[in-house]
Image (cartoon, rainbow, N blue to C red; front, top):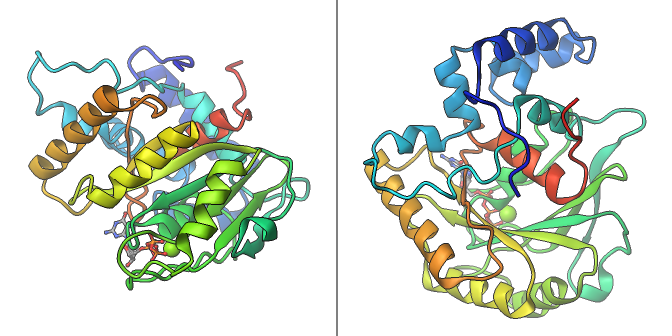
Amino acid sequence: MLIGSVSLICGQNMWTILRSRLLLSGHFSSCDVCRAMSNHASMQSIAKLQERKINKLIFPITDLEKFLGPGVDRTYFRLFNPSIEQIVKAEELFRSSGKHVIDYYTSAVRMDHTPSLTQPEVCFIGRSNVGKSTLIKALFSLVPGLEVRVSKNPGHTKKLNFFKAGKAFTLVDMPGYGYHAPEDFTDMVEEYLQKRQNLKRIFLLVDGSIGLQKSDLIAIEMCEEFAKPYVVVITKIDRPPTGILLTRFLEVQEFIVNKTNGCFPQPFLISSTQYSGVHLLRCFIAHVTGNLPSTS
Ligand SMILES: Nc1nc2c(ncn2[C@@H]2O[C@H](COP(=O)(O)OP(=O)(O)OP(=O)(O)O)[C@@H](O)[C@H]2O)c(=O)[nH]1
Ligand SMILES: [Mg+2]
């Protein structure tokens, strides 16, 4: 899974080149520039920040690692360690263009209502309110006008919602489990997870303040039983104090390594509101769907 690396993650020369490439590149319209500069959604927008801040945004683990002693096993912290160039290239898959249209496709309430699509698919599961829809919204934040509905009220997403990124991949937003889950949740979700042929990866979201709950353990058991590859994403990392987040992260990491077989050993850290970890996750999605270009 280790795909390419950069010596100092963001070596000075690499960033000088990246900055000039991004800022001078013809890929960005003036509208893109305005939007991108107002938040940290794109690599272009963060290229102007200090290197330390860029590092924290792309690799949020950087912020936690510094509190750990030298004895802590860091083997899996950066198992997925793409180069900056790969991250920049992967971002293109999350922009709509004439040839690569990104849009909401359809919704389904049962497996036999799901669209027959052949492109690789990834889906997002987790407790209600954990931030599934908001994460999809952040991933697609570079697509003007794309609506992904989110709510502060748990149980908001009621169907499997399919978002197509051209012919490259499909992202599927799902209803949450636990509090306010739809009554037919099990019928809707289990069969999809078990039988969907083109499903390449399940992203299982866990709240960074709360950590793994009983319902998450049931979901993990289900992924294990169906022998589907899955990944844990720790969400809302902007909320908890660092000590709490670090504890939750280490708990999740230890659980994955010691108690699971099909889970990718590196949990991803995400703040969808601040875009921390979003660039890395875009790149990981490109990777697991077979769309990540090799470095030139
Ligand atoms: N601070 C912060 N809030 C977040 C983040 N992600 C989501 N939220 C908030 O959490 C609430 C729930 O977000 P949703 O994305 O709708 O959650 P969901 O998992 O899709 O919920 P259901 O559809 O009900 O299962 C909303 O109020 C979001 O604004 C984050 O990274 N940071
Ligand atoms: Mg939702």
